[in-house]
Length: 280
Image (cartoon, rainbow, N blue to C red; front, top):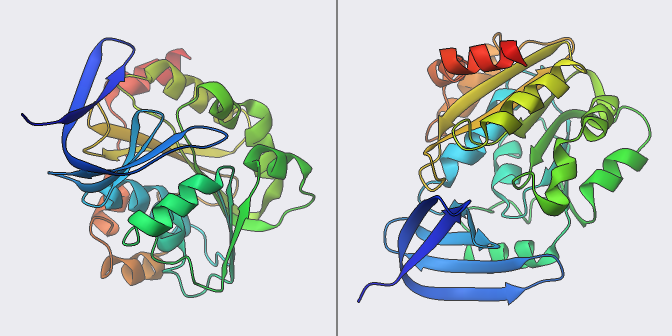
C-alpha cells in the first residue's frame, strides 16, 4: 500500500504526495522539521506539516522571489534574507557576482542543519565566503538595526500564523524600508491569492502605505496547494517593470524559469485581484 503524506488546509483542502521514506524528523525549539523522499518531487522539506520546498520544483519559488528584485536594483552589493533556511534564496542571490555580502537571518538552526545534510542541491552556496548565516530573530534584527545597510531585502518566511505573523506587520515593513539604501528594493512572499486572498490584499494595502511602488506578481509552485503563489516587490525610486536588462540577461542562462519575458509576465494582475485591491 502506497504511503502518502498529506498537507491539510483549514480542514477543507487536502494535497498529498507519495512518500518512499522519511529521511529526517526532528522537533526543534520552534517547529517540527522533516525531510521526505517523495516519488514525484524528490527530497522535500516539510515544516509543521506544511510543504516548504522540494528538489524538483524549488526553482519556481526561489528564482521568482529573488531574481525580479536583484535585477531591478542597479548594483545590489549588500543583501539581507529573512528566513530562507533551506538555502535556495541565498544560492540565487550569490549567482550575482557583484554581491559582496549576503546576510541570512534564520531563527531555527535545525532547518539549516537538515537542509545542508539532505538538500544540498537546493542550498548549494553555504560555503560561499560572501554568505553570513546567523541564527537569530529576523524581526528583532530589523527592529534593532540602525541605518540604511542593504540594497535588497528578501523575506522568505512562512505563512502568517503564529510566530511568522509579525513578518506581515506594518511595523516590520517600515523597518525593512528603513534598512534599504537609496535605490533599494524589498521582495517578500505574499501568500496564495487563492487560499489567503484576504491576507494578500491586506499585505498590498500595508505596503502601499509605506512604499512609493508596490508590485505584486505571480507564478506556479507545484507543491503549494492551489498551484499559484504570489510575491510582492516594493521600492521607492526604482520600478520592477523596468529592470536592468544586463542583469536579467546575465541570470537567464543559469535559470530554469527566469528570463526577460517571465519578468514582464509575472507582474500581470488578474482582474479579480485588481478589484479586491481597489476595494481594500
